[in-house]
Amino acid sequence: MKPIPFNKPFIIGRELSLIADAVSRGHLSGDGHYTRLCNRWFEEKLHCRKALLTHSCTAALEMSAILCDLQPGDEVILPSYTFVSTANAFALRGAVPVFVDIRPDTLNIDEKLIEAAITPKTRAIVPVHYAGVPCEMDTIMDIAKRHKLLVVEDAAQALLSTYKGKALGTIGHFGCLSFHETKNIISGEGGALLINDEHFFERAEVIREKGTNRSQFFRGEVDKYTWVDIGSSYLPSELVSAFLYAQLEHADEITAQRCRICSAYAEQLAPLEQAGKLRLPRFDADSNGHMYYMLLDSLATRTALIAHLKAQGINPVFHYVPLHSSPAGRKYGRVSGSMQVTDELNERLLRLPLHYEMDDADVARISAAIRDFF
Ligand SMILES: *Cc1c(COP(=O)(O)O)cnc(C)c1O
Image (cartoon, rainbow, N blue to C red; front, side, top):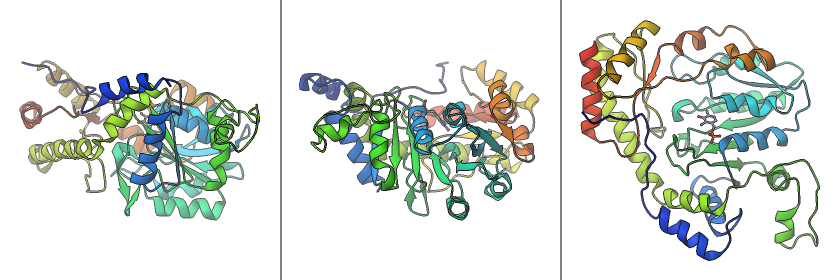
C-alpha cells in the first residue's frame, strides 16, 4: 500500500514562476519586491500594525527577546510543552525560562498558573498557541498589564487562527509566525515578526538589519547608514519571499483544506472517543487546522499503536520532550509549580498525518487502521 507520510511540502500556485520573476528583477537579497508584498499581506490580512519577514520563527523569537531588552537573570514565563526555540531565544539573552504547566483541554499554558510564577525579575510572558488553538489571551494580557510585562505570542502554528475575532500574533506586543515546511503555509524555512506596538517599530528594523539603520537610509530618513544597536541578519532572501507570496495567495484555501481533514478525522474517530479509548482535540471554528492529534491512555498504547500504523505505511509522530526535563532546560530554566499535566500528556499524545495533498481516502484508511488496532 502507498505510504502516507506525516508531512509533505507542496506547491499550490505560482511559487516557481514568482521565483523566476524575482531573479529577473535582479534583486535577490532581502527587502525587495516580494518581501514587501508579503509584509503588506500580513498587515492587511491580519490587521497588524507592522509585519517584518524573517528567515524563521526562531529568528522572530530572537528579535522579540532583544526588543524586550532582557538582562541576564531576567525571567520569562512560558509553557514547557513547546518547541525548543520558544525558550532558547530568551536563554540566548541570558534570561531564565520559567516553565508553567499546561491546560489538559488545549495543551496551552494554563493562564491560572501564570501569576504564581511572577517574581520581581519577570519581564515577559510567552504564550504558545499549540496546534493553532488560541491561548486565553484576555486573561494573559490583563496579567501582563497589571504587572507591566511584555507579551510575545509564539504563533508559529497559528497563522489565520483567531481569538475573539482577532488574528493570533496580533494581540501581544509581538507575534512570531513560522513558514517552516511542517507548518500550514510554507517557504521551506521562513518566519515573520508582527509588531503590535509602534514604540518598537524602529528598533525592530535596526535589529533585523545587523544593528544598522539601513532601512531608514533607504527610505531617505537619514543621509548615511551605520551601526547603531545590537542586531543580526534576520531577513529572508527574495527567493524565499517569492515562494512564500505564492502560498499566501492561496492561504484561505490551504487553511480550509486542513480544517476539512481535521473534521474528517474527528468524524471517523468519534466512535473510539465515545468508547473511551482515546481523547480527541478540541476543534473550534477559530483554529486553522494546523494539527490533528489523539490522546491515548498510556505510553505503552502509543508505542504499540505507532508500530501497528507503521507496519501499514502510515507515519504518525509525537513530539516535545518537555523542556523542563531536557538537558538545556534544566541548565538554563526552572519550573514554577507542578508540571503534572505536561509530564503526563506528552507521553500519551500522537499526531496523525496532515498535509495539504491528503484526501478523504487517506483519512479513511488511517482511521480504519486505528479502529482496527483497538
Ligand atoms: C515550528 C515552531 C517554532 C520554530 O519555527 P522555525 O520557523 O522552524 O524557526 C517555534 N515555536 C513553535 C511552537 C513551533 O511549532
